[in-house]
Amino acid sequence: MIINVLIIIDCLDKGGLQMLLYDLLNNSDNQKLKFVLLLTGNGNFEEDLRRTTTTTHVYKRWKKIDLGLVNYTRKILRQYEIDIIHVHESISCLHAYFAQIGLKTKLVYSLHGYPDKLIDKLLMQFLANKSAKVLGVSQTVLTNLFPSSKMNEKYHVFYNGIDTKRLASGPGELKKELELNNESILLGMIGNFINDVRDQFTICKILPELFNEHSNIYFVFVGTKSSKYPIYFDRCFNFCKENNILHRVFFLDRRDDIANILNSLDLFVYSSNKDTFGIAVVEAILCGVPVIVNDIPVFRELTQNGKLATLFKSKSIYDLGQKIQDFIANPKPYHEKAVKAKEKAFELYSIEAHFEKLSNLYLSI
Image (tube, rainbow, N blue to C red; front, side, top):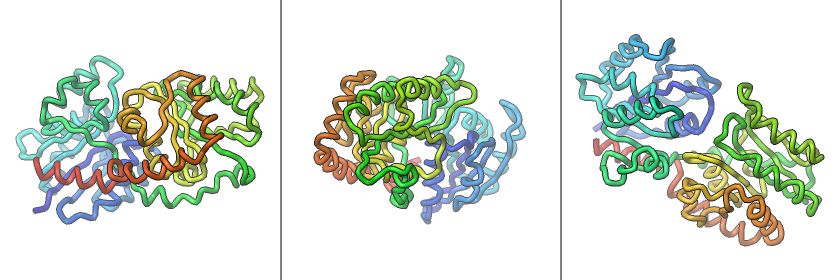
């Protein structure tokens, strides 16, 4: 029995969702599942998705509700005898819902974040009600959006899957690029400066004291500066400038060699206000890098209450500073913990684990 699955994605800028689909489709050599991909928007990751090992269609949606897209999607459903439409965005789900009316095709809706506006939340709830299955990238997301989801068999937790082979390919040469010697200790965080989701500023505030006590410590921030909301980047950069530490803090903007960066770090440090999964944190764990991350609910969930990473109290400069100082003074237990965490994370967050769970879900539908 072959299950034909149509995946629709509208936002094509590189991010956690786009990397999930990239890894999934590049590892989808499965005789039971046949994927068809429909790209309906624009973005810097479009060509990468086009090159995945799947049948790809392109229809550029030109307005919020595009009846042409509905008709185009319906033709694909019939042409490939699609059994399941899997969508990851409300706009894609809305068009898919109209396209499958009257057909036997089932709708699967994955939730990756929280809606900003009430009307978006109402739309999400409507679409979830119309879907055969609703998947959340964490229990935290599902509980926040649908408090009774644990009591409903329609809702399932589906952690993002990550291709560990891609992570293992990173050569770990960032220190060489930054002209740091082998004795230097490189700490880093990966996350864009585009909104209030991430909290790089808390990390910035502990750096002056850390640098005063240790002459061989450096920090690297990897992430894009928003042209629309530059304040999130500027306050971090200006703080470092005012404290005369720019020679030891590197702002690298967007990078495509994430595996190389992670494999170069001695310690991964991450602070967030409201992540829904935190793919950078999980990738660091899968690389076997010691991780320190703040204790918001989603990271308590993903790290199994600190078993897979060291948790610090959110917004606490003192607690974060103490945890980093402890790592510098005695790194061995952190590395031992990272080795065990990597093994457990593979069972939970590898693309292989995701694919197997997804296959079983499709079969159950």
